[in-house]
Length: 334
Image 1 (cartoon, rainbow, N blue to C red):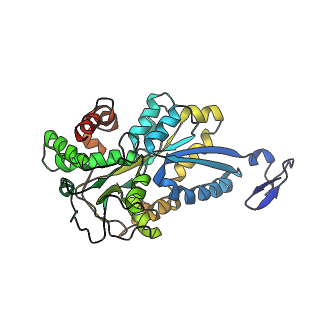
Image 2 (cartoon, rainbow, N blue to C red; image 1 turned 90 degrees about the horizontal axis):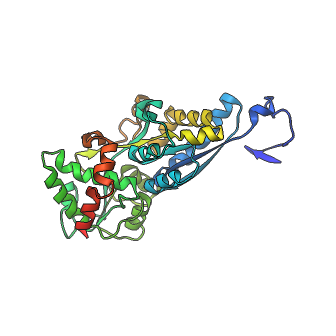
Image 3 (cartoon, rainbow, N blue to C red; image 1 turned 135 degrees about the horizontal axis):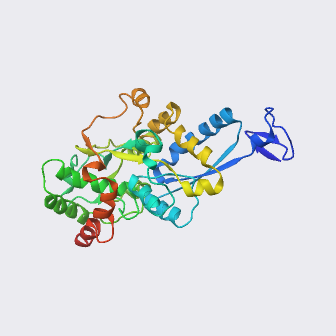
C-alpha cells in the first residue's frame, strides 16, 4: 500500500480516489539539483508545485532534491547524476552542462527573464558593533581585516563575490590592473576558503572565525529570520546583481520521459506563489508581480551584471578557467 497525502492507495486499483483513470495517476519522479542556499525555499515551493500539478493534470509527482556547492553539483551532473532540472548559482555552471552535451543551446530562452528565477546581492556580515568599521568594498583592503568567503573553484556564490570585488574597481572608473591588485590584496586576507556559501556562513556565524563574511543577501536575511544572526548586514555599493538560473536537462528528461513535468516545474517557479516563497527566503523576485508584492522588503542599491564582464562564457574562460585570473590571483595571494 502506498500513502499519498495521508490516504492509502491500493496498488492494483484501476481508478483513483478522485475518479481519474489509474494511468493518469502514475507517479512521475523528478530530480532537482540545486545549490546549498536554495534548500529552505524549495522545501516550501515543491509541495506547492506538487499540489498544483496534481490539480491541473491528476498526476502525482515525486520531487527528489540534491543540494551542494554549485560547482560540485555541476560536475556531478556532468559525471552522471541524472538531474531533470538544474537550478544553479549562475548561468556559467549551466553553460558547462550545455558544453557537456546534456542541455541544448538556447536554454536561456525557454523561460521568462532569460531563465533567471531569482536575484540577490553580495552583502557583508560583520561582528557586533562592527569594530573594524567595514561598510564598503575598499574597507576589505586592510591586512587587519580577516575576510571569510567561499572558494570560487567550487562555489557559485564565491564567484559572485569575486565579480563584486572586481567590479567595485572597474565599475567606478578603475582599471583592470587596479582591480587585479585590489582583489589580490583582499584574498591575502582570506585565511580559509570554504566549499560553498552555506559552509562559509557556518564558519563565520557558528565557529566565530573572521571579521567579515562575504555572502548572499538571501543568506543574511535567512540567518536573521531564523535568529542565527542578528547583527545588521552591510550592502556595499555598487553591487553585482546575482542572477540565479533554472534549466531542464534535455538529455536526461528525454531519456526518462519527464520533459513535460520538468518544464511545468520550471514554469511554476515564476508563479506568484513561488516568487513569494523565494522573496520570503531572502531572494529578490524577478517578476513584475513578485517585485510589487515585495515592495519595501529589499534595500535599493546601484547594480551591474555579469554582462559587464562579457557574459558567463567569457567569465568562465578568462577568470575561472584553467590558468585564468583566479588561478593567478590565488597563487599571488598565497
